[in-house]
Image (cartoon, rainbow, N blue to C red; front, side):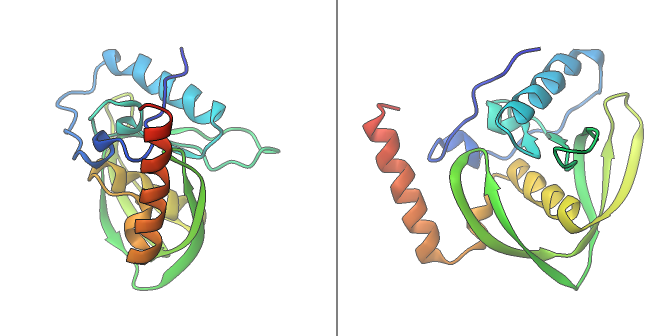
Length: 171
């Protein structure tokens, strides 16, 4: 396992729509393991494969608190089947937009279908932080960032700030 570099805004790869995984094989295990290690090291609670430069529909999530045992979930080809009309608001952040947080309103509950790392078809219903995290990470697979859910003015400011930093750092 190894920690992979995380793409940072304004990297254009973050806007790519990720490709479905055609077949779940053991070849995916090193990527999934690296994604978990990268996510835990960052530290974060979710990571999409595109954030480490791999345009495949793979997401890793672990919403366990620091004082709780880890609860890692790997989702391959996840899709939202249903979302509630009821909304909830969380202060979201993103490993690809470091140190920027903003309130985002999303459906409070979702039902998601995915394939697990063993190739089994799964469904899960989630609420609270897990529901928000699932929606956030699945957005990444569509080339969307959480800043797409905030006002245009705030979004333009953060994009400008990160574009300026990237130029300064020679990226």
